[in-house]
Image (cartoon, rainbow, N blue to C red; front, side, top):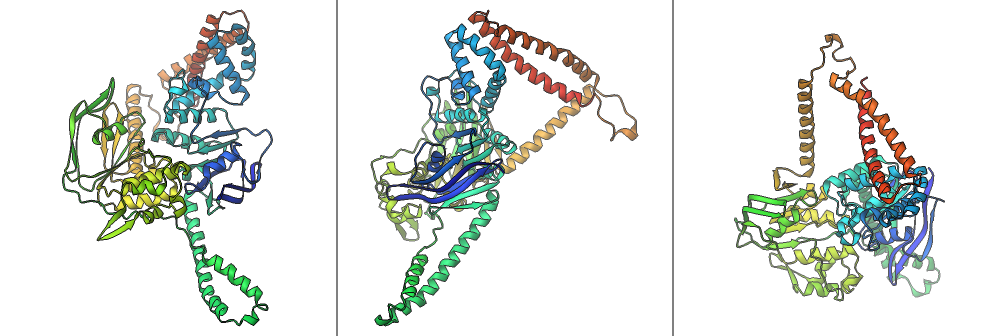
Length: 627
């Protein structure tokens, strides 16, 4: 395979903090690699180094000459004043730069520049490129191409940046949390797009289904070292456990041998010290190995939940809308004791608004939520990550409580509690501003759970949390002796922790589904397939085909209906006409004789023509199979 990227002996540290040391790996043509590590281990730093945005202590990063590389940052930024479409064309790619110039010339009514650009655009087939950009933006639910980037939300900006990366058609794509801010429909589209493409991929993501279905190789940074696994996420889990078991066995053997050597060290006469120097040196090496206690990366979340009564909450005729956008319409629901509900749906359907109404942050237009007296909420919100950056981690937690009640008379000190959350003593005395994004999320989760809630409401808890923390959080939630509502786009997480779903379809259409997300997805696909069969049967009933001889009924090739044949003949005539009109428009736009208004008009028409041609050509190809 052709090598696209080679990283050799890479070392990076921040002062006394060593992120990784002497790591080596490569990305070859066609490889799709997922990068996994605990928060704070340097995943984003490594991607920034590879992308040339950060320096490093030693080693080398080498790309193949003239390789087209796309990089999706975790928090992308664009210069103020750019429109969505201009941001999509904000790239070093020649075609993209040309389109950006063309869009700017149109905005400036610069006729001379437009005329100069048209011939170059024809040569690079830039019209098709612009259409492709708009299609990808459409899949990512970005439809206002003229909106300024400074007015976009963080999620919208991330999706524009993702479109920017995809339309440049890179040979190697580097992705940092690509599924953050994507709803389930967009995530599944991107998953399908990347798994079918020939693009080489290096990515960081916490979405385990996404890893499993897109990546064929996993690399893990653990304790400053890098480990490679030639398989998907499921294979990685199996082999990683084997590696940990082997390391634990090695440490155990070292401990057993150390006890014998320690006895020898204590008994040996001082006079024999010179002769046994090799053995003394070996003893100290053995002692060093024995002290390498295996960090399981386990977060202990066995925190007591407060008593909760039989009455949890009732939604009574809850109605909410924003202008023409309906969130709920006379919605009624009685929440049961120990119920674990997942809320899913596309962005903008009202999931977070529903949660905020329950929490009293947003008032319904009519109706109300009747919450039980014993309910004690623990609310993890998307906007709740607000700390004094100049405080130390341990002070943030001590501000809430001096100890944590584990139940049965057991109490846990703040420092021990933080240690369970993977905050080492050094990290506990660090300032909050020094934490990575994922570590801040973990600290926020810690502050929510330590209050001993009996009803957890988690709005997108999986964003920026590492996979190790997610695994243990899932185990905690499954055994949590209280109520739970989770809003999440993480399909794996939802499958693990919820008993049923509220599916927000939009326009106040809310479905209660008795199962997890995978079960809902299977049901939906089966229902959609059945619906298509019914529509096909209805179409056949309306346009019956001539009866065929019975012996050929199962073998004969399907023939076009009369209506389809007429459609095929019409397409045969329409497509050449559209092609001719397109050629005339391109010739006119290249003539240099058109006014700015005429250029703008013809540019808009050529975009419409391309859409029509794509649609009619696809239909012609579909029908031609049966001619």
